Amino acid sequence: MDSFYQDLRKVQKKERNNGTLARVEETFYNDIHEYLDGLRKQAIEDPFSNAHGTLKQAQIIATEICERREKKISEAAVVNIHRSYHLFTGKPKFDLVDTTPLNLTPEEEKFYYSLIDTLKNHRSNISLEKLSEDEKKSTEIKASEIQTNTLDTPKETPKSDDEVLNRLDEIKKAKPIVDEKREPVEKQIIKSQQNNAEPVMPKKEPAAPANIEDNPNAGDEVEEFYDLESQKIAKDTELVTMLVFDEVGAIVGVDEKVYGPFRPQDLVTLPMVNAKIFFKNRKGRQVKI
Image (tube, rainbow, N blue to C red; front, side, top):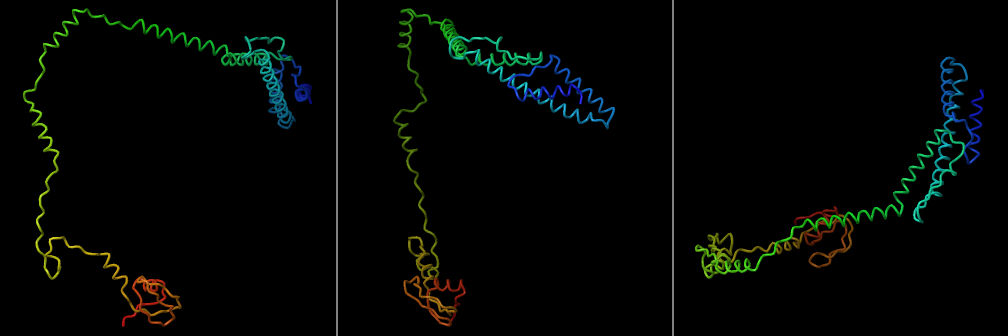
């Protein structure tokens, strides 16, 4: 392998093993680009050469070196700004010359100071002194606005005693406005009472008499009333005869009587409601005698 590739491997090893930046030439990054471009041309001219493998390995090594150096420079900038700029203890203090990392290339030096400027601006924005100044400015602005509004507010010119007396005489001489078309208060009260009275419902004329045979209560003044609940209870408690298919234990009917126990081929009489349960579960069927 060529010498520049060997130099890259040495720089890679130093960046891995040391916490500081490895010493490189000022033209380090330009040399890397020229070296990689030469490998690309060689790979194109001779597809069967080892230039393809060398190019791939060189790209990996150069990327790792660049990333490790970026991380070290960023950490150094953060540590230096922590040491040099005091947030809430006294006035800010800057001393960044002696703490600049060694072995920086021109590109890395520009990157380092850009980080320092960004961190300084950030700390200046959040410092106690900055916040106090902003609060003081906002207070002064509000005070000036209040003073301006007070000065701009027009004051009412006090009226003289003669003008006040003349105004009182005009009010006394003025006649109350009376609406001639307006009704007296008594009539208005009577009308309001009549409007609020409950409406009188017209008397309901009795309906035409129905046939006495169809309805025995047709001649009564009270409307006919059908007790549907009583009819339903009478129908449910109607006794029916049933033929039993299976063995069933004793039950209590809706009429509060005990029926059973039942055996196959038994003919029993019980309320319709209870018999329907047998019919539904196919334990029996109704028999008409």
